[in-house]
Length: 361
Image (cartoon, one colour):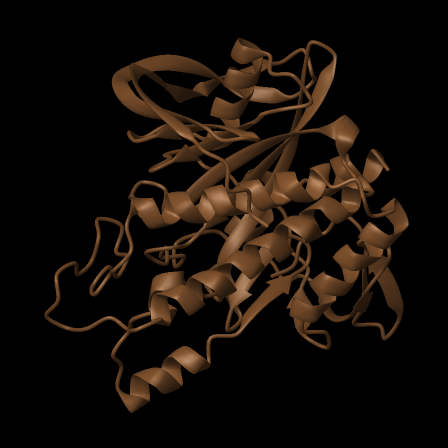
């Protein structure tokens, strides 16, 4: 997933209460890729067609209204739009959260596809946040979400190692898992992509919502060899840094060529990861004790603590350009992050400039 930077730039703890789960048997909606419709909020979404009936768990937390889809859906972003229009939730909460075991039409930046959604085990998540209660400038939201995902990744890595019996060589592998971030929308482990963020908007009955989409590789790392512009970029998953795959164990290759041997993760692990991130994001948004300027500085400082400045990146092109096979973007070196989330880089001409709406490879 990725972050629609231009849209937000232009707009310039974990709770422990009781939860209630209710299982439903309803009709899934799968996106028809041949049809699109403009919503009243100005967004374009896929028209939906009825697919087979599917199972949904609705879970009520103190601040969350979670809808977990157990059978494949098209996209958590599109399901979030549909449910916002259907339920018309109040901006003060509880906040709508969509979690899917599988999604067949997940998307990233500039029309790219989010890979790996046809199998269970990874996290496909959308959190709906009212734009009007955002506690920082909009361009800092993707940085804060990346920080929350990075924090939860560190906790997951710590938990999966607790009490595990490992050899000395395995301990060495586990200790070298370095969690980082890449501007503006990626979370990494050892420079390989673990998670991405896509933020879109939807207006329902005069209320504008930010749809915070998060895709995180929990149980397997999707194969990116045949994706546009991605052949040189590796992917990873939390599983790889918990218990290394062992030959002869159950699993092997999934249908998409993902290595699942030795996997100790399940959809429950992905669900828990998503709920923790959702709760922490909502708790952060609703915390009114800290002044806005202080909170904004805290976001930037925490994001910097995960960043690796001095790294060389390539500025990405359109899907069409990258599909052409000969695209060569400008090489830039990351220098610093600004108070408003813009990235300071040094271009090939040796001059420094700010990136606002670009994506890096």
